[in-house]
Image (cartoon, rainbow, N blue to C red):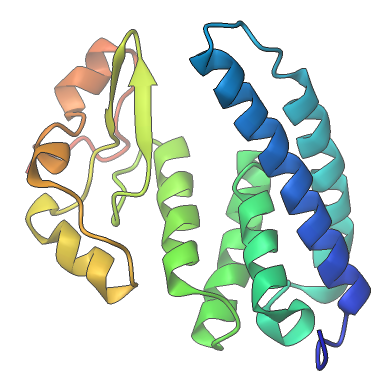
Length: 188
């Protein structure tokens, strides 16, 4: 790709992203066949990707489109989605600044923001994260569910069906599963 200042870094990100996605989809396909697949390959890949990201983000900052192209920036974001929460917390402000500078996609940023909120037991704002336990899966609680699809549209995400929004986990349901929202306000 011409015009990308770091073509080798871009190629490495794309390769890493492809490898980690292949491992995750292989796991899902095996589960769908009724097999009990081993998650270890994905864990090994994630650890290797984390070591890689720590070094390159330390050196370059967020890997935005100005450095690795739009597809490289998306690959960076996708790999960060599977990093430990302390790194997601650390890198979220970097991605927020990249979005403000037009170097990363707002639609990808909200996935990371929602994931960080869920990991900290806070409501998500864009409804990108689901959670499942004991046979129930549903949308992690959302701030202001009545305006969720408007917020999603603002960043280019497709709308969620009303029943998906209505079936989101409630604070009471989470408490029954041993999780407590950080701001345990009334369900809206």
